[in-house]
Image (cartoon, rainbow, N blue to C red; front, side, top):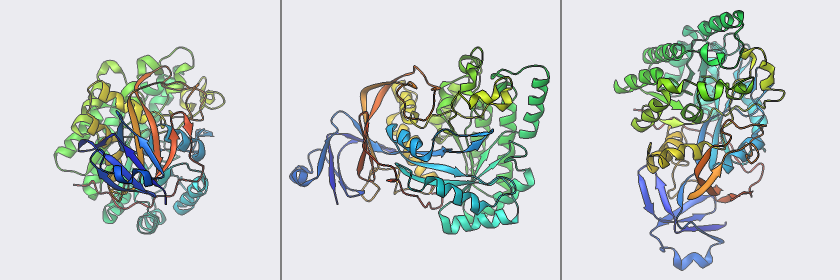
Length: 470
């Protein structure tokens, strides 16, 4: 088995920074030592990587991606092959994607379909959450089976998209009760879908068809109300609740209140809600705003949402930054909604840029180095049953390691990104800092601008229960 020694770097963990050398034996971290500690064995290592003046951190874990997901008459443009390569370039070494069950379909068939999509195609390790699009007795039994036998321990429900994924309050309560009994986690898309559908129909009837109306017909109140309702249902069911892709400060306030009361309620946000806005992006002239259609929608910067989200990341009222990576090209995909904003496929591609964009919070003083790693690596592992195998550089953990150069720079552009998209929502954004080298289970898969990994290197992650609960 190959041995790799990383020397001269500063290891960043959720608890702080420490100058340390890292010895990797095969696929796992063997030991950490003070600088120079392994000098006597360096010559016996297969490779020595100089990380001087760089950070050494655990590989990023993106717990919210949608590779090859069918939606809105098309499918997400990244395959598991292209999407995981892009993730690797961005310092993400594990993803958790969403297996899909729609109303009338069998949950286990949905999981099998996602295994078939991913197997042999991923450049990095991957796991699955399970979307439950039809809560009935069979689905509830499947939740038990997946938790106890398949390593799928989190289940996503939707308060939005009636007729596709939507569950009513009674169905949600039943699923939450089952999850609570299993120790599994419920993930919630919290928007009031039936009310949104009314607002959408009314806007279209008035001739309001431009992309910006996607946000205006999904107002803050729709996210706030659904978040509060989900929290109350989880409280009755005694189930852990994880609210995905939060964008509105009022909804985050509901999560903060529940957490202050000791509830196992957690919130996630995404880079688009920290950097992009209704005014600057979704309201671009013509059809250009379609590139920024996602749900929950981009919010108004003038209303203070962006600053509130950064503050919630500092206080842990928001615990994780993921991407909700669901990319669609403008040509032939986003264009399906030209003349009708409600037909624009919902999604933004971010899996390659999450670590860099969140690091900008370190550069600007919004968060510290340890919090960066906690939000992007360690808490995702703990929240979704992967810790301590993932999320930390420590003896016995998988050797998923990112060497990050704080002196490097990146200018985000569709011309240079590796996602299968013909545009970038972050076009032209200058990033201070750059991924230098990425190791997945001890193998170097990215060096500078070169991908040195391989399709099929990634393995399926059977996850345990959350170790982040109160």
